Length: 175
Image 1 (cartoon, helix red, strand yellow):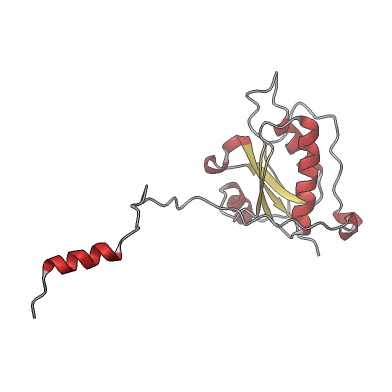
Image 2 (cartoon, one colour):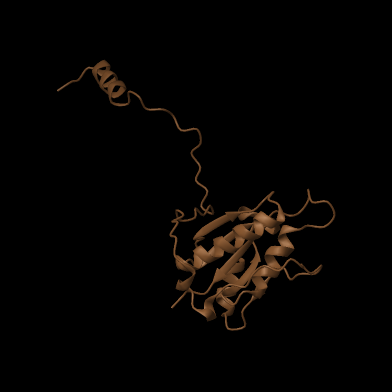
C-alpha cells in the first residue's frame, strides 16, 4: 500500500490552514495573574466595629517601616508573603496618582477586598522618583497599613511584582 507523498503534504497544508506561528515559545513560570476583580457594593454595615478601617491621616511621618508582620503570624507564612509565594487576589495601581485621590482609592480598595474575603493584595505605589523632594505615596500607604487592625502583614514586593515600588498586603478574613 503506497501513498503519494504529495497527497500527504497537501492534506497537511489543508489541516494547518489559518494557523499562525507563535511569537515566543517561553512561559514565565513566576508570573502571577491576579484573580479577576469582582466589584460588589455592600454597605458599611457589613464590617463590624472591630473590623472597621481607620481613616487615613493627613500627617505622614518622615520615617516609616518598609515591612511589618503581626506577631501571631507564623514565620513560614511571613517567608511566603515576603517571597511572593501566595496567589495575589487583587491589585491596586496608585503609581503616578496624587495624594488625595490615592488615599480615597486605597481606602475603597481595602474595604472592598475585605468584603470579598481577599487575603493577599498587591498595591503599586511607585518609588517616588518623580516626586518633588521625598516620596509621598509609599510612606502614606505604609503608614495607613500599619494603623489598620485588619492588616496582618505588609512588605515590599518581589522584583517581578514591582520591587520597592509595590507592597504585598496580607489581610484578615471577616468572620
